[in-house]
Image (tube, rainbow, N blue to C red; front, side, top):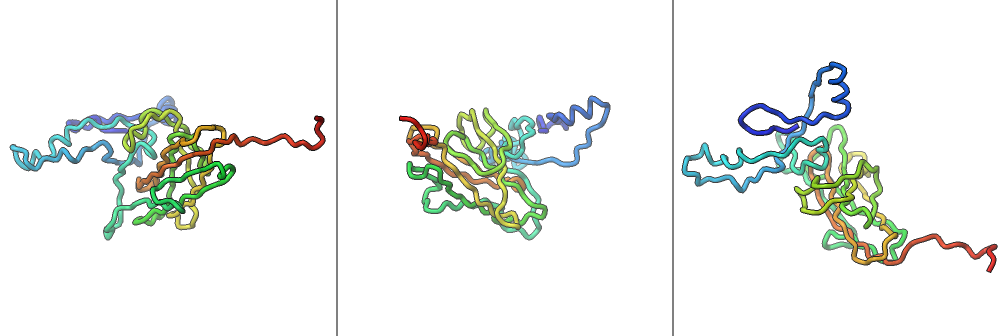
Length: 238
């Protein structure tokens, strides 16, 4: 759900199938949890020189139109507001390591047909008590694949807050942690070998589900040979 404006307590809510089912049977909805975000807030509008005084410094921000409600918080909210321990001195971040790369790019060449490459992600500055989840979003799935559970396909403007792009076939994957503390993931990437055009590329964005910490990297696929199984010449007629 999302607040429509700041002049009333009117709330715009989107019901899931389960919510509609409960209402159709005469039940009541008991909302016991929600996610808060400041995605869509332009803090550069803060005006310390407002002629009406300090009470109006944030007037332009308070009057901003807000995002419509979304049931896909895992990738529609870039900056979630979270509760951290009182002695926290840093904001949780997601750190990416790509072996052999200096510019956060994974590159596949013709010799990499059938090979996997690995990217490591570390969640720093936060120790989850009840586990955590990492989502991987591939903008163009015909460039490469992720080793993970496919959550769903997305399209439209779901991720325009990160990068303005024409998202038509993007996919979201749930990635499993590598260690028992749930703060590190080894992410396997496999190249698509059904295309023959070099230089195909995509952006992959990783989003940690508890804190909203995110990071992104690029994948370039230069494989130009179709990878197909060849028919054996054994026991075949010429």
